[in-house]
Image 1 (cartoon, one colour):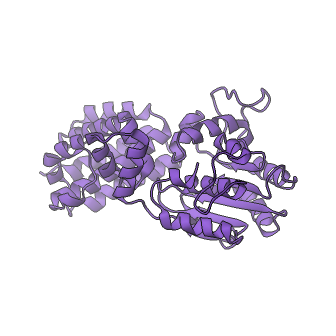
Image 2 (image 1 turned 90 degrees about the vertical axis):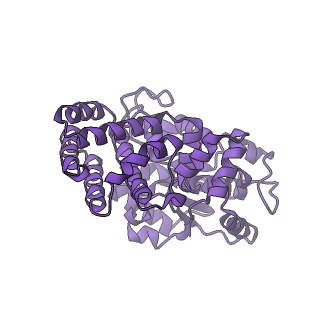
Image 3 (image 1 turned 120 degrees about the vertical axis):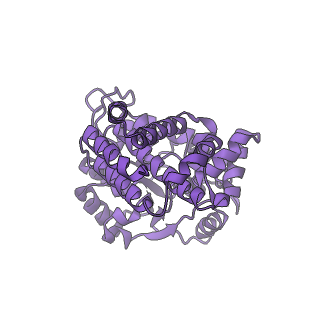
Length: 384
């Protein structure tokens, strides 16, 4: 990943380049901001820029031996830590006796493959990639020992050893405390690049020992330019993707390249709303049965999607069409549906969907959570 491959974020890129060129690199940086803003991509580009032997003032050269290895994410002085968990699927990248361990090393091949394919991916796409969509990824105790071992080795080729940790908020307490210790007393020429989606969930002592770099949400123009660079041609789908993304480049890219998940969430949302409006208990039960078969992460994605649709329909109802972020088919269906989403019921609707999301996240029994949600929605959607 090069700086020029990342849409927007020109001020952040300039700041990172200046940091390197002025030899004022902090030993621990925390990239944080909204999903799809390019935090992980920026960390990768910075690591590559630091290690490049032919860098210009603007970017890494892309051709030196270091850059060639970075293009495969296989540089010996680049280390990764990311959430993992026991998998029911065979992990071909690990040895037979380690294939079910919840550590990054056992999933490195899949990690490199996923990251090269999409450096803007979110955690749900990663969990799906390694077959743990029904579980919560963690950075566990075993990981902390491996971090210390790797970083205490001498660098092989570069002046610096660089550790990129994705989603440090997924560390357990033991791993957090050990990371804190090594950040406080880092080995020589070691750089930590932490990339967080929820920096508030990281222990304050780690936050206080890192230089915070807040990554802003991308503008619609930046998202459009990034999509055009990737896809190579303009189309109505790109217009829909930009509107739907709301500054999330991963979401825009996913919509532009593959609309199946969004369409599935839309269909499930429409089915639920129609069943609740008609007070059809059988249809609600059928919907619950179908949704309960989906993986936990897919259920969470649906609930997040539903919250967005409720917000957009409230705006539609209030005549704020100019700031809507809906695709063509979502907008067409919402012309009539939006009349049922009002200032009188929106807070309660948000509360019920957020509650269901939190319960699913806490591994509650999905059928009970979803049935409770459906039954409560009947009185909130209907206008008797």
